[in-house]
Length: 83
Image (cartoon, rainbow, N blue to C red):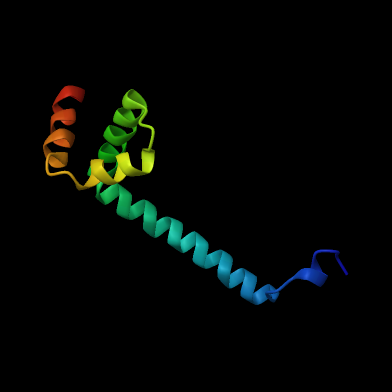
């Protein structure tokens, strides 16, 4: 018996099923992100602003950044700067 076996909570079949579910979820997430490329751009704009401004409270900064009315305009304008 392997030392790890005595602490195993899942059976081998359960672990195998869990591992397959993780793979499936990663594939679904990758597909979603590929279909919504604006998300990568939005996060990129956020990270750039965060690192430029280095706010004292990054959580507050994030909540304000993602809920402000001008977000779409800023993200779209960053596309034209990249092109």
